[in-house]
Image 1 (tube, helix red, strand yellow):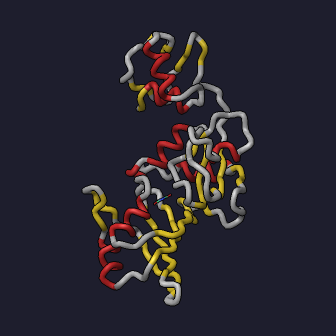
Image 2 (cartoon, helix red, strand yellow):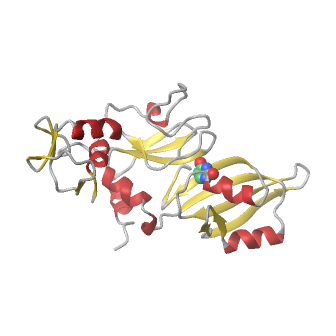
Image 3 (cartoon, helix red, strand yellow):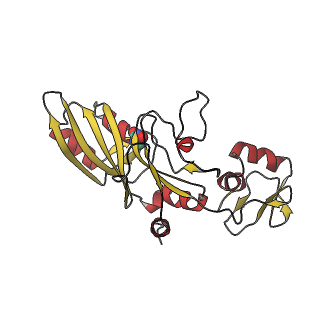
Amino acid sequence: MERLQKAIANSGYTSRRKAEDLIKAGRVSVNGSIVSELGTKVNYNDVISIDGKIINKEVEKEYYLLNKPRNCICSLNDEKGRKTVTSIIETNTRIYPVGRLDYDTTGLIILTNDGELANILMHPSNNVEKVYVAKIEGILSKDEIAKLVKGISIDGVVCKPKRFRVKRIDEDKNNELVEITIVEGRNHIVKRLFNSLNHEVIKLKRERYAFLDVSDLKSGEYRILSLKEVKRLYNLKSK
Ligand code: URA
């Protein structure tokens, strides 16, 4: 179940804010009845209409895998005029990124107009693994690694990496390359983990998301996910 305004936004019809205005104006109906309550919950079988026109059925689903370049923002548009991930994909469909990578983070991001799949991938109970490679300032001590592996509290919630390994140490430049696998999706989580140990993240790339990677894509390149891959992503839903 999800909120009506979110379901409308996920259908690609309009933004959540505008969907709220449409609901309040009495222009939205669910299964034939006008609904003007913002909190109303709907599921994927409910037929949503706006001004009498069905908006959430028979919309072709699109799925893209992008190797996000640096200096590109994970939102539909940016008031500062910065490049967005959606502007890279050639489509007329209103797609959106599943989760976020920071402006300066590179690597794997999925874009789709399939709200159901996006919810599955982002829901914490489905434990979708994300593998990041980070270049960090300084060299982690044994104690710091032990703390990290045990789990670090960020805003009162512990983030415990699933896996962690040091890939390369550069003593001359006083930095190291590490690989960290986490399941949670809080914003800036990798940077916040290392910052809490007083190490700055100089570079960050998401190399893997569940079973997907971007090793076959150059920075800024994307490809369409196969039906088989989409099915495998759906199967990540915990039973
Ligand atoms: N963690 C971060 O700190 N930044 C990202 O972009 C993704 C995960």
